[in-house]
Image 1: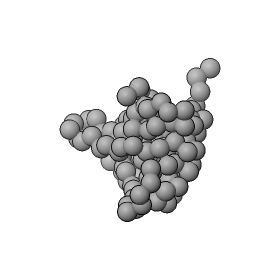
Image 2 (image 1 turned 90 degrees about the vertical axis):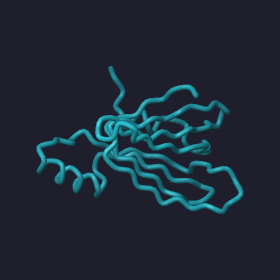
Image 3 (image 1 turned 60 degrees about the vertical axis):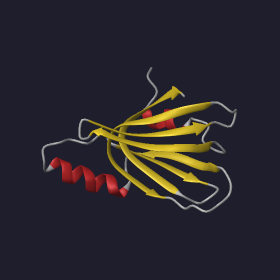
Image 4 (image 1 turned 90 degrees about the horizontal axis):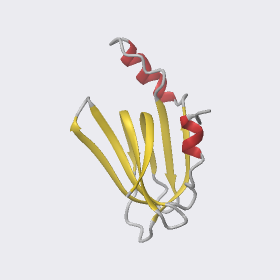
Length: 126
């Protein structure tokens, strides 16, 4: 049985992982919109978490703290308030975004919040 996307996401070792890099790829805008995070997991491995079929990206990032950007928590939800708004807007254009998810990451070091609205994610070794 295939694990659900939301379960696979929250099952990752997010707590105390370190966000090393955040990259937005718009080279093929509208065809391949991606957000990629380089994450160092608590065991020291580095991997890229790539969000595919992105429709929005919100970040409230705080800087100035001399410490690694450790992650407090991550969650994935299908019912964030902004999702309903986005689905309604796209539905008027004939696009069904019923499978769109909100991936949320909060950090310890700077109390930053990152929200990625995408259909799926994948992990690859860096």
